[in-house]
Length: 298
Ligand code: NAD
View (cartoon, rainbow, N blue to C red):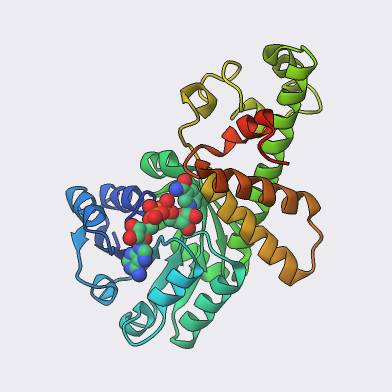
């Protein structure tokens, strides 16, 4: 069993750290928010007074933070975790961040003689609690081999996507597909309504024809056809529209810096920005169907 430092014990990090404890690891955690610390402590996480204290003597360090600037802020500088860890410690960043910051974090770790991985997740808070997350991992083969058993305590699918930043690239590309496909499915339901076609009829046809996709068959944006989708519980997330906008914005930043043409990604980003501007950022991202129906976004 490993000694693990865990920084960022929020909606995702809290249950992930709890699953590491359940798997028998010794976990010491840190967060800026006292409610997060209290919940983690109740789950068996030892609480540290600073990031440096949380990682002292750790073999593995997991970070689960909002964005690239938070990750680099925690990694870098005299109070940062890279200065505090022993060479040989493996750093695993599970936050969803931009590819450039992920590569910078791994370069900082390499300069110290420390292995690091980017390992963003999909599966949401439900997956974090159940230990069924998917990890998309970027970094060296050796570091990936060391991380696999640790990640297996928090997830069920662990994919080595390539070198530094490849995990973030996979996450950003996947969520760009998701954002676009949810809008496509929602537009089809809105058009069907105007044409007098029932939602169930459209679902029955498209779920078994060429329009089939996850946004339709698992996460259907209208209530009824898929009883477990957020549409059946007044669009409570799930995956909030604000988080979808964050990931789409990362995709557009990445597309601009890599010179990729992603016009539908750009349109999806604008539509989710409009939803968030309408103070619907906390609503599940499938709630975009209601904005389209109301004609609230062009
Ligand atoms: P969250 O806001 O609930 O948790 C982030 C935590 O980081 C907070 O508790 C915050 O206090 C802490 N934090 C910020 N700066 C810190 C610092 N300097 N030191 C210590 N702690 C600090 O967010 P979340 O929902 O847990 O998401 C975390 C990451 O996972 C994000 O990158 C998000 O995009 C990604 N993600 C979230 C979901 C989801 O459904 N919530 C799904 C997949 C990926």
